[in-house]
Structures are given as structure tokens and as C-alpha cells.
Image (tube, rainbow, N blue to C red; front, side):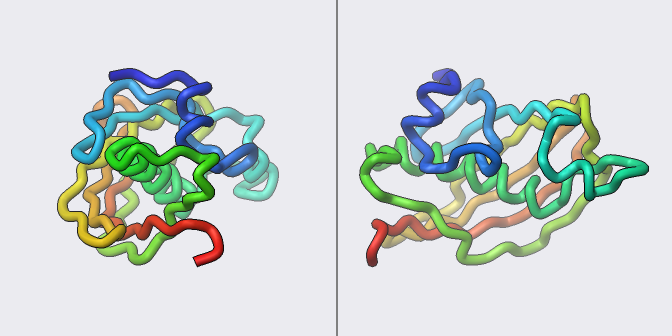
Length: 148
């Protein structure tokens, strides 16, 4: 199943400049997702990271993986952005950055759910540019209603 930007905005509470998913090319709710992030020189962090050689910050690559995980997980339980639900990072293990991500790259974000229990999910995430692994991490995220 594919999702366009309208469907992504329905799933996630994130908005510019923190929305880091442009398209979902395949999602199996509660199992796995493949999403895309088009990296543009117009991103707000590039003037300062770094002016002489723009590189996407690694923490934002991890955030993009977490947003992909949130879309998959929200779809798995039927939640939407207007339900006042958010997905928080609860942990990141084994994060490795294999190559810089620069303007003009397209990140392919692949996330699989490894385990879920009581609103907490453990995921394996990988970010690719073409066939080249750019970053990978084990993520733990917690779904919460706002105000809890």
C-alpha cells in the first residue's frame, strides 16, 4: 500500500520543518514500511550544517526512521494525528552512520517492527541512498495520548 503526502499528514502530527517523510511506497501496518525522504538544499538545517559542505544531521536521519515507524504503528492500531496521539523516542541502540547524506539524495527508509507491547515498539531501521546503506539503528518508541 502506498501513501501520498495527504495520507502521511493524516497519520503524523509532524509539520514543517519537522516532517521528514515525503512518500510511503509500501506499508504493511504493524509489520514494516518503506518510505522516502527527498533531501533538498532548501532544508532549514543546511545553512549551519555545514555551510561549506551541507550534510543532513544524523539525528534527523534517525528521526525520519522514527516517523516511518510511527506511520506504520499508527496504521496498525488505527490511530490518526487528530487523535492527539504522539510517538516518542524511548531508546536508540546501535546507531551507525555509514555515509553522509547530502542535498540531492533520496533516503529510502526501511523499518520493521520487531516487538510491540503496551504501546511500546522495538524496531529495526535502515536508511539507504540508492543501494548504499547510509544509517541504521534499533529504535524503541512509545505511543502516548497527549496529556498522559
